Length: 177
Image 1: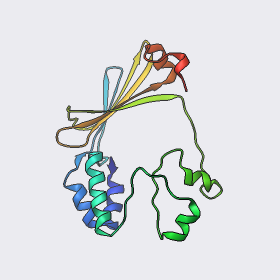
Image 2: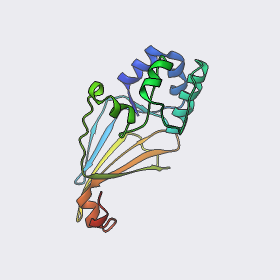
Image 3: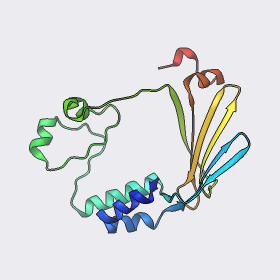
Protein backbone atom coordinates (compact mmCIF):
# COMPACT_ATOMS: atom_id res chain seq x y z
CA UNK A 1 0.00 0.00 0.00
CA UNK A 2 1.33 3.42 -0.96
CA UNK A 3 0.20 6.95 -0.15
CA UNK A 4 -0.06 9.56 -2.89
CA UNK A 5 2.96 11.30 -1.38
CA UNK A 6 5.06 8.14 -1.57
CA UNK A 7 3.92 7.49 -5.14
CA UNK A 8 4.96 11.02 -6.10
CA UNK A 9 8.46 10.29 -4.82
CA UNK A 10 8.58 7.00 -6.74
CA UNK A 11 7.37 8.65 -9.93
CA UNK A 12 9.96 11.40 -9.57
CA UNK A 13 12.78 8.89 -8.96
CA UNK A 14 11.86 6.37 -11.69
CA UNK A 15 8.95 7.19 -13.99
CA UNK A 16 9.23 3.88 -15.89
CA UNK A 17 8.96 1.88 -12.66
CA UNK A 18 6.02 4.02 -11.50
CA UNK A 19 4.16 3.45 -14.79
CA UNK A 20 4.49 -0.31 -14.40
CA UNK A 21 3.18 -0.13 -10.85
CA UNK A 22 0.30 2.17 -11.74
CA UNK A 23 -0.97 -0.23 -14.42
CA UNK A 24 -1.92 -2.71 -11.67
CA UNK A 25 -2.99 -0.42 -8.83
CA UNK A 26 -6.16 -0.63 -6.81
CA UNK A 27 -6.87 3.00 -5.84
CA UNK A 28 -9.05 4.56 -3.12
CA UNK A 29 -9.47 7.84 -1.24
CA UNK A 30 -11.68 6.96 1.72
CA UNK A 31 -10.97 5.42 5.10
CA UNK A 32 -14.00 3.87 6.82
CA UNK A 33 -13.74 3.25 10.57
CA UNK A 34 -16.32 0.73 11.85
CA UNK A 35 -16.84 0.97 15.62
CA UNK A 36 -19.81 0.17 17.87
CA UNK A 37 -22.25 -0.06 15.00
CA UNK A 38 -21.22 3.24 13.41
CA UNK A 39 -19.12 4.03 10.38
CA UNK A 40 -17.02 7.18 10.25
CA UNK A 41 -15.70 7.97 6.77
CA UNK A 42 -12.72 10.21 6.18
CA UNK A 43 -12.04 11.07 2.53
CA UNK A 44 -9.41 12.56 0.32
CA UNK A 45 -6.44 10.51 1.50
CA UNK A 46 -5.20 9.02 -1.76
CA UNK A 47 -3.83 5.48 -1.51
CA UNK A 48 -2.98 2.73 -3.96
CA UNK A 49 -2.05 -0.92 -3.51
CA UNK A 50 -0.70 -3.73 -5.62
CA UNK A 51 -0.26 -7.43 -4.96
CA UNK A 52 3.03 -8.33 -3.33
CA UNK A 53 3.78 -10.89 -6.07
CA UNK A 54 3.25 -8.29 -8.81
CA UNK A 55 5.32 -5.68 -6.95
CA UNK A 56 8.21 -8.11 -6.51
CA UNK A 57 8.05 -9.12 -10.20
CA UNK A 58 8.20 -5.47 -11.30
CA UNK A 59 11.09 -4.75 -8.91
CA UNK A 60 12.99 -7.81 -10.14
CA UNK A 61 12.48 -6.85 -13.79
CA UNK A 62 13.61 -3.28 -13.15
CA UNK A 63 16.72 -4.46 -11.30
CA UNK A 64 17.63 -6.81 -14.13
CA UNK A 65 17.28 -3.95 -16.62
CA UNK A 66 20.01 -2.14 -14.68
CA UNK A 67 22.24 -5.21 -14.44
CA UNK A 68 21.60 -5.78 -10.75
CA UNK A 69 22.38 -9.31 -9.61
CA UNK A 70 19.73 -10.58 -7.22
CA UNK A 71 20.40 -13.44 -4.82
CA UNK A 72 17.74 -15.18 -2.80
CA UNK A 73 17.84 -17.49 0.20
CA UNK A 74 21.50 -17.21 0.97
CA UNK A 75 23.13 -15.51 3.91
CA UNK A 76 24.91 -12.26 3.23
CA UNK A 77 28.70 -12.41 3.24
CA UNK A 78 30.51 -10.78 6.15
CA UNK A 79 30.20 -7.00 6.24
CA UNK A 80 33.90 -6.45 5.41
CA UNK A 81 33.52 -8.48 2.23
CA UNK A 82 30.40 -6.57 1.22
CA UNK A 83 32.19 -3.24 1.75
CA UNK A 84 35.18 -4.27 -0.35
CA UNK A 85 33.24 -5.94 -3.17
CA UNK A 86 30.14 -3.86 -3.86
CA UNK A 87 29.15 -0.23 -4.42
CA UNK A 88 25.62 -0.76 -3.10
CA UNK A 89 24.01 -3.58 -1.13
CA UNK A 90 20.32 -3.75 -0.33
CA UNK A 91 19.62 -6.24 2.41
CA UNK A 92 16.20 -7.46 3.38
CA UNK A 93 16.83 -9.87 6.18
CA UNK A 94 14.15 -8.78 8.58
CA UNK A 95 13.99 -7.77 12.21
CA UNK A 96 16.90 -10.05 13.15
CA UNK A 97 19.27 -8.57 10.54
CA UNK A 98 22.83 -9.83 10.94
CA UNK A 99 24.20 -6.73 9.19
CA UNK A 100 22.25 -4.35 11.42
CA UNK A 101 23.42 -6.29 14.48
CA UNK A 102 27.04 -6.25 13.31
CA UNK A 103 26.89 -2.46 12.89
CA UNK A 104 24.55 -1.59 15.74
CA UNK A 105 26.85 1.33 16.59
CA UNK A 106 26.08 2.86 13.18
CA UNK A 107 22.43 1.89 12.69
CA UNK A 108 21.51 2.34 16.36
CA UNK A 109 18.48 0.04 16.17
CA UNK A 110 15.74 0.24 18.75
CA UNK A 111 13.20 -2.57 18.91
CA UNK A 112 9.95 -2.00 20.74
CA UNK A 113 8.61 -5.51 21.24
CA UNK A 114 4.89 -5.70 21.95
CA UNK A 115 2.57 -8.52 22.91
CA UNK A 116 0.18 -8.67 19.99
CA UNK A 117 -0.59 -11.20 17.30
CA UNK A 118 -1.92 -10.74 13.82
CA UNK A 119 -2.78 -12.75 10.76
CA UNK A 120 -2.48 -11.43 7.24
CA UNK A 121 -5.09 -12.80 4.87
CA UNK A 122 -6.30 -12.35 1.33
CA UNK A 123 -9.97 -12.30 0.41
CA UNK A 124 -11.86 -12.18 -2.89
CA UNK A 125 -14.13 -9.56 -1.29
CA UNK A 126 -12.95 -6.34 -2.93
CA UNK A 127 -13.36 -3.36 -0.60
CA UNK A 128 -14.04 0.05 -2.12
CA UNK A 129 -12.10 1.87 0.61
CA UNK A 130 -9.60 1.24 3.38
CA UNK A 131 -11.64 -0.36 6.17
CA UNK A 132 -10.70 -0.31 9.84
CA UNK A 133 -12.84 -2.50 12.10
CA UNK A 134 -12.81 -2.40 15.90
CA UNK A 135 -14.84 -5.06 17.71
CA UNK A 136 -15.18 -5.37 21.47
CA UNK A 137 -15.70 -9.07 22.16
CA UNK A 138 -15.85 -11.38 25.14
CA UNK A 139 -12.14 -12.19 24.65
CA UNK A 140 -11.07 -8.54 24.31
CA UNK A 141 -10.76 -5.99 21.54
CA UNK A 142 -10.19 -7.38 18.05
CA UNK A 143 -9.04 -5.05 15.31
CA UNK A 144 -8.90 -5.60 11.58
CA UNK A 145 -8.07 -3.52 8.59
CA UNK A 146 -8.67 -4.28 4.96
CA UNK A 147 -7.99 -2.71 1.60
CA UNK A 148 -8.11 -3.73 -2.06
CA UNK A 149 -4.90 -4.56 -3.90
CA UNK A 150 -6.33 -5.65 -7.25
CA UNK A 151 -9.65 -5.77 -9.07
CA UNK A 152 -10.27 -9.23 -7.58
CA UNK A 153 -8.58 -9.35 -4.16
CA UNK A 154 -8.19 -7.45 -0.89
CA UNK A 155 -5.84 -7.71 2.06
CA UNK A 156 -7.51 -8.43 5.41
CA UNK A 157 -5.37 -8.20 8.55
CA UNK A 158 -6.72 -9.20 11.96
CA UNK A 159 -4.88 -8.27 15.15
CA UNK A 160 -5.35 -8.76 18.87
CA UNK A 161 -3.38 -8.67 22.07
CA UNK A 162 -1.69 -11.84 23.28
CA UNK A 163 -4.02 -12.18 26.28
CA UNK A 164 -7.07 -11.94 23.99
CA UNK A 165 -5.66 -14.73 21.85
CA UNK A 166 -5.13 -16.87 24.96
CA UNK A 167 -8.74 -16.22 26.06
CA UNK A 168 -9.94 -17.26 22.60
CA UNK A 169 -8.60 -20.76 23.21
CA UNK A 170 -6.46 -20.61 20.05
CA UNK A 171 -3.21 -20.55 22.02
CA UNK A 172 -2.28 -22.05 25.35
CA UNK A 173 -0.60 -19.69 27.79
CA UNK A 174 2.34 -22.15 27.82
CA UNK A 175 2.83 -21.54 24.08
CA UNK A 176 3.52 -17.83 24.52
CA UNK A 177 6.89 -16.69 23.27
